[in-house]
Length: 598
Image (cartoon, one colour):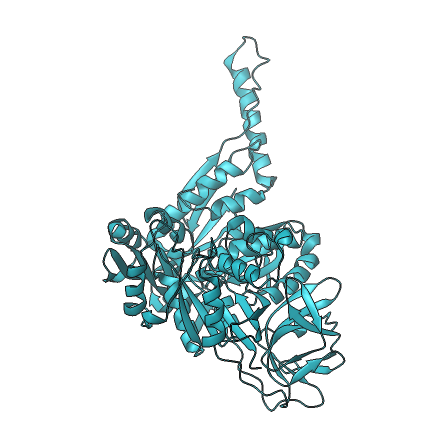
């Protein structure tokens, strides 16, 4: 175990984690020049297209240090976006140390701090690394001041590198060996392994990523999952190189994979402890803190025949994304589906795209919402994340919505536009400080429902990409909440209902009606699209009817002839409107999701 080092790379989004991982892989010779490509560990197309890391990926790097010994460096590359911070916290549970990457041009940002606190919670060795020193705008002295004042770390322990051109990579590898402690544990103890990730392989079943804390594991051993007591025989164990590398056994301190022919996906729980069936360990390892989703939306298959396929796809997807939760749901307009919880709008967007790409599904998403708290007049407290479960107005004594504390780091020249944006989103209790010359930190308390739509996009726009943003939930606060229903041709479309603040109801209703007017096809009769709160109509758009000129055949004659034909046409349209049903295309549901600025 003295030759094993388990470490992770953490940073704010776009500070160069994946590029540094590429250089470490190249330097240790795991990948030859012919097979090399950028973002080696980002193996999903969607990660490459967007230039972001979504999934933590593990790889074992063999490295011969200056002392002549060969070490196994187990690297876990992590995402930087706030929506995927749960991936980071799970990865850190398997490490003894981290490289904290800081951009030499942008300095310490919101997620840099958030990830530092996560590493401190796990009591890890932290090595600050200043990246992108080759940039003309790099200001290393300013970053060293921030490491001291904002992060509270010793600036003398820092390393400098440029992941792009490979400067300083040898020094980083030496620091990992010298400064990150060897893993604790005992090979002779009973097996205790923590599942930190998993994915489904169509040929081999569920592949489990785990970190062994005690004991050893080899093919043929019978293992038990302590959470649900299921038992399996191990078929293969191994390490992660560029591909899965089979080995004879895994020992305490190592990170690797297990294949045990697990076809029942629900048997595997991320954070569960694996032990031997005949010699179980005394108690499970500490798992991960339970994830709390903040954005809720329902997913429905476009064709009701695809419901079973969607259920199976979600089951397999959940294995690969432990932050995603779902339960069964149904809608009058859209049929059977699932109510899902996400960690943010980017998380929602990624889940939708991965389901469509990886499982070849066509799905519809309902309007995102958050979890509100209602105190009824009989004293019952009700949590509602689905507008269809909104209690009657007369039954509600008090309505509350979740508030977040948003911390934003930005150049001070953008303070005015950002404050305007936050006040527009009902932000209160603002505080401001200047951690370093030219940089400001703004802290606002805001309703989560105002943030989940397009706040992050607008924030990035007004700060021209230089601002960074992080948030945490604080509490529930009383608000005048109402249920906004959308009626099409007099019929309520429950998938488009929203719980909104009373002051925002009119603008949301107008926006939804206007978007639907552009998307719903015209009929032979007028279609009214209305926004309503209870029995009160607050917004309306009308789709005009196709009109046939029934008087075209009348050449002269008395006006009563024309009037008689028009009256007959009017009655026909009225009858059609009574029995006609309006089909709402999928694009209409997506149009309502879009922000005002789109």
